[in-house]
Length: 219
Figure 1 (tube, rainbow, N blue to C red):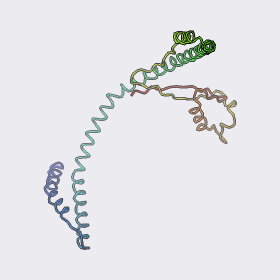
Figure 2 (figure 1 turned 120 degrees about the horizontal axis):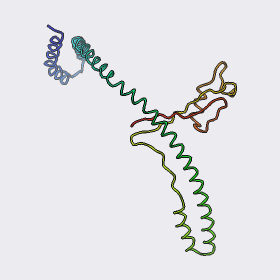
Figure 3 (figure 1 turned 90 degrees about the vertical axis):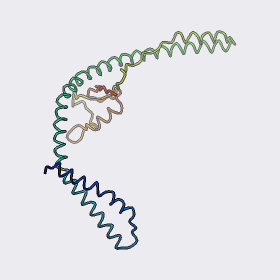
């Protein structure tokens, strides 16, 4: 008899016993010490049945896992090159997005400053008109200002992606790194990393080049 036949026979026998065992458990009223002891022995018997079934099925599980492992390894070998290709493309997209968004942010900052100047000048003119009781002119200025203000360019964010900041640093000159970033015999890399994560583009540590190398995450 094969391992599979033995397991099938053991499972079939157990399945036939389960209804009567369940009925016994449901009807069992434990109101004496002996009945409590008998119930404990019954649980021991059930656990032994579980152990026996697991023992019969283990060879099948092992064989099934080995078959699964072969298939999984094969799939990995087929798909790994695709992951390698994706790993080549993603940094290129991330690099472009980071550079382009930095340009757009710089443009947006300039537009914000220019818009603020226009708004400030308009506010002064509006206040002057209101003081004179010239509500028509004040309303006209308000309408004109809306046409003069420029919209800042939006950051690029391809559908289904997130550009995740990944701030890093490069040691340029250890002699220039302040004492507070040193342990007795080496750099306190944990402190440096923490400070860079906290201040990001505003972080400035002498002797280090701090830069953002964003990673692209697909949703």
